[in-house]
Amino acid sequence: MSNVLLLSNGREPPADILPSLGLLAHRVRVAPASPEQASTSPPPDAILVDARRDLVQARRVLLALHSSENAIPVIVIVSDGGWAAISADWGADDLLLHTAGPGEVEARLRLAIGRRTQSASQLPDEIRSGGLVVNESTYSARMHGRSLDLTFKEFELLKFLAQHPGRVFTRAQLLQEVWGYDYFGGTRTVDVHVRRLRAKLGAENEALIGTVRNVGYRFVPVKGTTPSPDSADPEGGGVADAAEPGSAHPQRAAAHANR
Figure 1 (cartoon, rainbow, N blue to C red):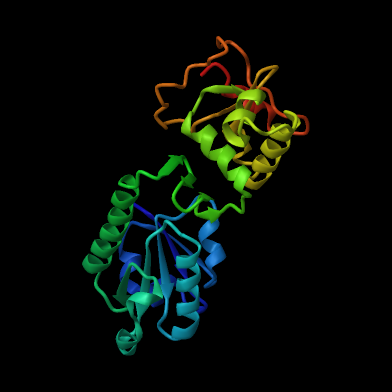
Figure 2: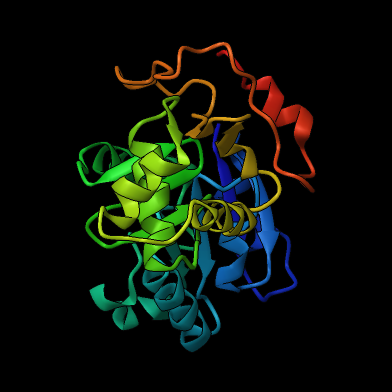
């Protein structure tokens, strides 16, 4: 069973937009045809875009999803007259006729989700932890499909920490690794960038960057993510994670201590 997001500006129920979908066991959420809907939490496994009546609007949505580096497979639903209009530059992964049978709908959803999952697992330039994706080649980061607007140093700091999940780095070490040996600013720079990173990750995800009291910072992998071999605490362990002043989730940060 998959979570399917159906984007449509029509007022019909899903059973009228794609009748066969109602015969399958997927969880379907209907939302207005807007690319922002793809960044909702929890993220969908697949997105269906209704293009039966408004091909122009559907194309805008598809292009916006494609340009935002959306990692979720997108399938466009067309009527009989819409076949000729769809082309590869629309950015859709596949297309469905609105009268398609349940077997075809199920197969296309399964294949689209499987292709994206397989493709993602073969990308060596991506670091993944839960909903966070850090792409080293494109210098971009996403959280549950939502693009994070990071500065160059914010990206470099997040990438470096994510490359060493669980390992604690002092502020001085982070200055050397991220800013370079020729940087003469103080360690307060690290605190400022960590605070900005947490704000951009969002309140629900700020605990990904844990504070180790009187030591520094570490990346806290999402439960179920395999830690790297260098994830041992270089400072000897036994130091509890502490939330930054003003953090809305001190208990959550502390829960990751001594993992």
